[in-house]
Image (cartoon, rainbow, N blue to C red):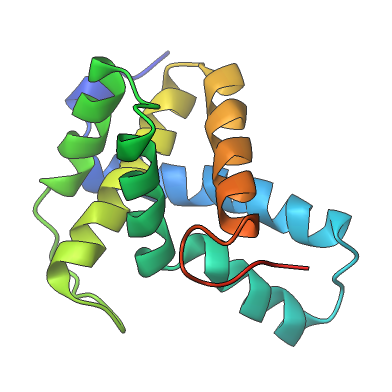
Length: 138
């Protein structure tokens, strides 16, 4: 039985998308030879923090990377009513981050794993090139 992602709220899609995106980032950290938990956590936040994800969405918009359908997926998550509050960031950034994660969750549920991988790699390249304001990574 397959669930239509359009029937799920944006928060549920973000829940899945957070995990999907995180797997790509954790794999990248290990590929870079990082093994110490504190080091892994510190480096990963450059990719997975709400601020980083908001910067990634901004980059995607500037590069016209997303289709109209993908923007709708993002907006579905961004506009979802959340009953949790943002930690270490403002509400607008938190909502953009939720939209970012919902995009990944929706694509995953639709079985568009090639697109998920393509976007995750774009995000990795974008962060590692220093374009999110976190500086160039080694």
